Amino acid sequence: MALLCGSASVTFPSSSFPRHTHTNTSSSFAGLQFPLQNLSSLSLSSSSSSSSSNTKPRTLRIHCQQEDSSPVPVPVPVPPEQDPRFLCVEPEPRFKGPDIWNKTWYPKAADHVNTEKTWYVVDATDKVLGRLASTIAIHIRGKNLETYTPSVDMGAFVIVVNAEKVAVSGKKRTQKLYRRHSGRPGGMTVETFAQLQNRIPERIIEHAVRGMLPKGRLGRRLFTHLKVYEGPDHPHAAQKPIELPIQDKRIHLQR
Amino acid sequence: MNKDKIFKLAKGFRGRAKNCIRIARERVEKALQYSYRDRRNKKRDMRSLWIQRINAGTRQHGVNYGNFMHGLMKENIQLNRKVLSELSMHEPYSFKALVDISKNAFPGNKNVVIPPRKVAV
Image 1: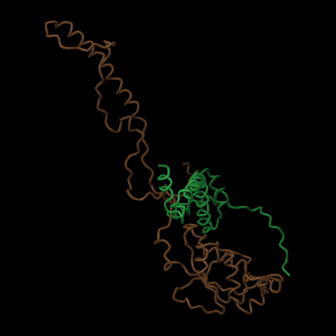
Image 2 (image 1 turned 90 degrees about the vertical axis):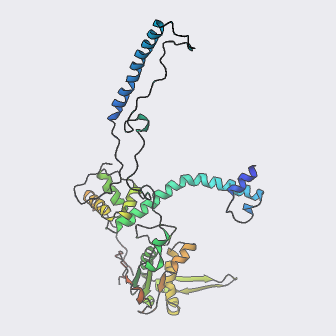
Image 3 (image 1 turned 30 degrees about the vertical axis):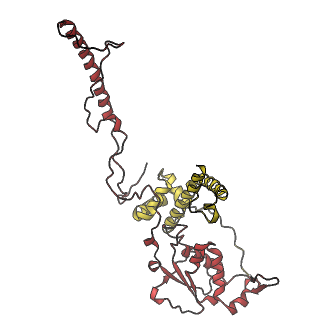
């Protein structure tokens, strides 16, 4: 990889294996040539000795087509670093343990324990409903974390206070409709934003956030991590919630 | 013989699909089709997951994924998305250095035209 970096503070993990030097191939090939030359001289010397001593008892000698062909070459011992058969085999890695660089990380059970998750608190006074719900849903799902995994609940808990003061722009206060159906014919109930805010104000924010979370088993569990309250108090002081960081610049209602 | 192979592949299926050959055969055929298709989909899904993780990591430093990759391409840094996502999780300081390199190379779009916003009533 070509990496141009001027700062000296970059510390990359040195997990790269030592690259094989290709200078020893030339010596190994040169080493293989020697046995052939030796064998040719050996065959000549053996034939000359057999012709001179005829008085020796005739031992069975197998003749083959290529009389002058040399027997099987004796392998010259080659040191293991220059053995051409093992040039492309990687050496033993320095670090023994799970391979974290070639496998995509997947969280273990200890990485998403509910007791160690962050708790956020946000005041809904005069905040636009949809933009607030979007930010809440992102934090509950965990999409702001690098350890985001779609199949695992890695997100945080969010507490919303002053839910009855959430705002909407335009004429939505009187025109936005919330519908529900009981399942029986003629069982549809319609009410406006203002009516629902008077009746059950928490339901407005819950409805908005539920629409932005995934629908399914995991989505239903994520929804239980949202806690909405009507006044300025909440019973979760023991979890020490911190302020929810909001990046949206248009989240405050502009009058 | 073939039945045994089918039942071996049908382990863990729901209901009669793991016990009755006529239903198991259909389900196993479908399962093999899905596995063929998903061997190709897995590569796409993994890359999408890496991109989402890199996006989350860079946004913590104030840069979004598109601008970050553009800056890296300008500097001819050929780290792939898998490695970048692992770096963002396990090596935060190295990742911050990469984000700084990218910001130097490509500070961001200064010529973005924001369409006029309709005034709320």
